[in-house]
Image (cartoon, rainbow, N blue to C red; front, side, top):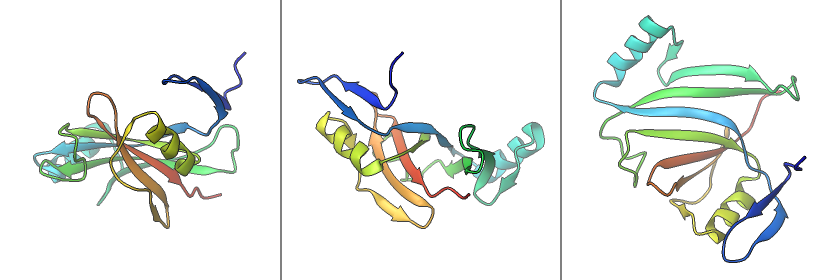
Length: 145
């Protein structure tokens, strides 16, 4: 059995180090021609509980039921610059732990880090690109207990 608190990094030099990583999906974001109409369609046809910012699904951590979390589904105007430099029509937000250490390791491994870690009252964020140019938002949330 592999100890999941350790990860093997494949780069020019193989190293073994303790590191936090993705803990879940924080959100799914879509570019749309008409975000309001899309929100209405998803609410009517699939029952998504919409607010001004999309749908939020609250849940509890299976290993620590006292910890609350959330996952967001949200639409953006098709001309949003929020996904830049990606030209794709979607972005996935991953929940992570230890975002500063993770960003440093990603930089060391040659991953494109788009911006610096930004801190807000609800968590820390940074954006990266995968090898195919898909925008990925990393989020270290401040979960409610």
